[in-house]
Image (spheres, helix red, strand yellow):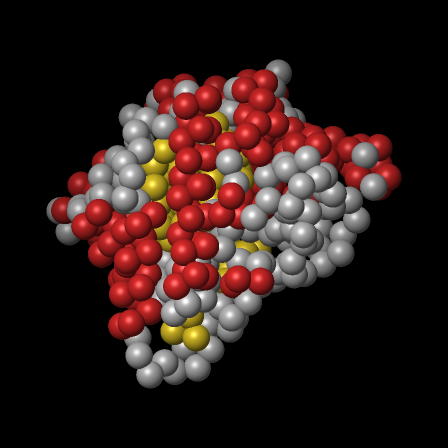
Length: 417
């Protein structure tokens, strides 16, 4: 009863600004977040022939309970989803194929190796997204894939990406919602290169081959993801932001921005409005970089709120594909999903409960004192009361009570692995 009462009081506070909280919650329900499966097993995947993590990727921590099988990973995801309000999506990498004990090279992957994922998604009413895996493989050991000077290695990865688009098409056809198939590669050099152009020419040629076959966008949407630098590619990354932005605009592909893939003084929130002037759609991988692209669990910090505010200000909630990308093995992995995803949804709610049109008008009139004052005052408006009501109305635990479910799951399931 207290939750309802608090909500009614909050509703009145927001109504003074022309904000209908009931309508806000209806909008929020319709925004899916693509939740990354790789948080649950530290990006190990289920390939028969396991390789060490590479491509500048590392997962630190040894918290017990890591998923060791597809069934365990799906069960963990299902538990997390039960504690998150709304209907969302799950994002897979190619290394999560199930090949019945057979060694299947990545360039030979087929939709049939993801049948169990599709059956599971159908049961839960979820959409699936996909990523070819161009790291943690002997053919990526020197840090080059689609831009590799060796044609055979380059062709291997081209064929892997082509196969991945077919898998994405399969997901979209089977599940009735388009799959976002996103390509990220680790290609780059540790030290200053003597030739920046040639690797980029090869990458462009590789992408042209990958995208040569048209796939119905109602089944599969192609995205390409940039990066500033990585461990082992500190001085030069072939697939820079400028490279992929140009390629995406010229070839009608989605440019995917990862919040950890830029210089520490850059913010993705500041890029959204500019890019939407020239692109119909964008994609985001929301993470939390700490000094480098370290993919910490998403918290409700200033940048997360600002990203959500930009999506609302730009009227772009239906133009930007939202996904998460973090991995932390130092805490309960299922809890990490819950914390990060709930925070992304909180940020969207916060933005929807902000009088963006009024604030825009203040800026246009040059009333900067009032603009700053109102923006700051809204940080302590009764947003939490609306969040609690939303969680209760969506049938998920309110406030921190979801931790009881996590602790029980850890005791009964995770601790026994």
